[in-house]
Figure (cartoon, rainbow, N blue to C red):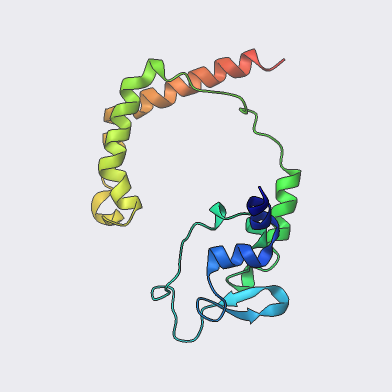
Length: 160
């Protein structure tokens, strides 16, 4: 628990885990505003440390900014988080039983055609044509309609 506490409260530890060693993996570009940059000769594609999973290491509000335009974003995000209202569908859970087949079919199409585009293995321009139709043929609209039907019923039941 002490380690978790440190990862969530110690800015230096958080940035060590998520950004690496100062001077080797990053340098201070604007110390007053906590902006960092790559050291001379290091680029995004040549850096030797990039876990790209900052969110796993602790409190992201402790992260140094990677660009000057990010300065102030954490404060704005905190305000947004504290003034947000809960989604009206909070608590709704889909009953997957009526659409198990459609879910399996849509996931199979998604994995075969959408993931390779999303992950950069296939170009959008060459591979996106017809994907919407394939998803609909697999049952995407049935899936959407059933989830909407369940949500509408849940909302009517929980509107009191």
